[in-house]
Every structure is written in C-alpha cells, then in structure tokens.
Image 1: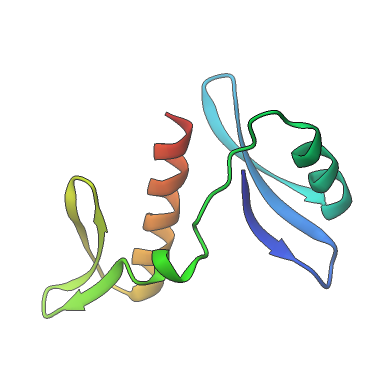
Image 2: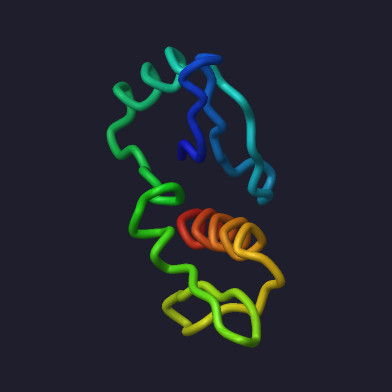
Amino acid sequence: MVIRVDDDAGIGLVSFRAEDQQQLIEMPLTEIGLRITSSRQPVLDNINSQKSFARVSSSKEGWFFTAREGLQGPYQTEDEAQRELGQYIVATQSA
C-alpha cells in the first residue's frame, strides 16, 4: 500500500510484507501506478486522510488515537500519536 507520496521528487513510500515482516520501500510514482493498475485487488490505505487525522485527540493525560479496540495512548506529542496511528493502520491492513 502507498503510505506517502512526494510529488516533487516523483517517489512514494510503499508498505509491503516480506518474510513475515512489514517493510517500507521508496518507489518511483510511475512504477507504483503500473503496479496498482495491473493488480486485481489493490489495497489502499487512509493513513494521510482527513479521517485519520480526526482520529487523533488530546487530553490532560496526553495524545491519543481511536482504534476499534478503543483509545490508544497516551503519547507525549501529536506527531508521536500520528506516527503510531500510521503504524497501527499498516499492521491492521497487513493482518
């Protein structure tokens, strides 16, 4: 699945599973496009969507994100909560 896209550099960060490990690799956007269009069942993530950003919130205890299992956290910063949410999404989609 495509995690992040850098239009200026023409590359994307792609998540994949190999040897029972979740891994990330940078790939040219043209290659990503070819692979997605040739796939019968592409997996699309929502890590950087507005819906995902809305899943992060703060309270006096720290930063949290919502998951099916309930609130996850606390984390010290919003960035840390966002990063953990991204890892959660990748793990959930690859399960």
